[in-house]
Image (tube, protein in one colour):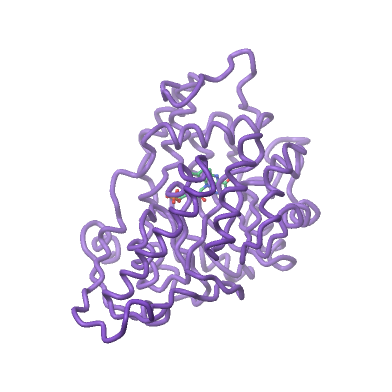
Length: 370
Ligand SMILES: Cc1cc2nc3c(=O)[nH]c(=O)nc-3n(C[C@H](O)[C@H](O)[C@H](O)COP(=O)(O)O)c2cc1C
C-alpha cells in the first residue's frame, strides 16, 4: 500500500483472506483511514441548509443541547460510532474516546468485537471503555457473523452477544451491516441469507440497534428490521468514510486486482446520510444520523431532520489516535458549534431544533424527490 502512513504489511505474514487475522485487519483500517483520503466525493450534509433566525429572543448561555437517547441522558445528541478494538494500539484509541466521551457526556460505540469474543484477541482493547462513566455504550458485532459463512467457523449467537456486551458493560448491541465492504474485501463474507431472521432472534433477547457502515439504510430494510423488534437505527449513510475506499487500498496492497477495482467503482455507492435519515424518521424509532458528520453544524442539520442524535467516527479518529486532550477538544468543538447553530436557528433545546426550518438543496434534493 502506498499510504506513507506507516510501514507496509509484513509480507512474511499470510494475508487475512480467510478471516484469520482480524487483529491485523482492524489495525489496517485505522492506518488507511488516517493515511488516505477515504471520504465520499460529495458532502451531502452541505445540502441541508438551516434557516437563519436573525433575532433568537434568548441568550446564548440558555441554549441547552442535552437530550435522552435510548433511555440515557446525554449532554449533547452525539454518538461516537463504533470503530476499533482487537489490536494493541486500539486500546489507547478506545481509552481516549471513552475518557473524552465520559467527560463531555456523549455516547460511544466500540468496533466489531469479533476478534475478542470469537478469537480471544486483545479483549482489554475493548474492555478499557468500561472504566469510564460513558452515559451510553454500544457493543458491536457484524451481521455477516450471525450466520455460518464458512464450514466450521464459529457463529455469533446469544452467548457471544452476552460476552460482547459484558466486555464493555454495554447498554445496547449495535449490529452492523457491511455488505458493500465485504464485496470489496479480499475473501470477504458473501453470504446474507438468514441474517434478517438471526437479527430478529437476537433482538428478542437484547436491545438491538442496527447500523450501516457508510452506505445508508432504506425505509424498506428498516421496516423489515422494525418488524423484528430492532429498537433503533444508525443510518451511517454515504458521504463520509467510504469502506469501499478503505478496502480498495487494502486490496491494492494485497494485489487483489478485482476487489481493488470494485472498490474504486463503488466508492460512492449508497444512500446519502441525510436522505436515509428522512426515510427512517417516520418509522418512529430513534434514528442516529451518521456518515460524514464532521462539524457541530452537521449535528444540528441531522437533528433538524428529526434524528435523535448524530454520530461520527472518521471525524474523531485522528484526535483519538493522538491523545485524550485532543479528543476532548474535538468533542467540545462539535458541541459548541451545535450550540451556535441552535442559537442562530432560535432553538433553545433539542426539541425546538427538531422543528427548526431547513431547505434541502443539491443532490440530496433530487434523491428525496424520487
Ligand atoms: C477506522 C474505522 C473502523 C470502523 N470499524 C467499524 C466496526 O468495526 N463496526 C462498525 O459498526 N462500524 C465501523 N466503522 C464505521 C463507522 O462506525 C461509521 O459507520 C462510518 O465510518 C461512517 O461514519 P463517518 O463518516 O463519521 O466515519 C468504522 C469506521 C472507521 C473510520
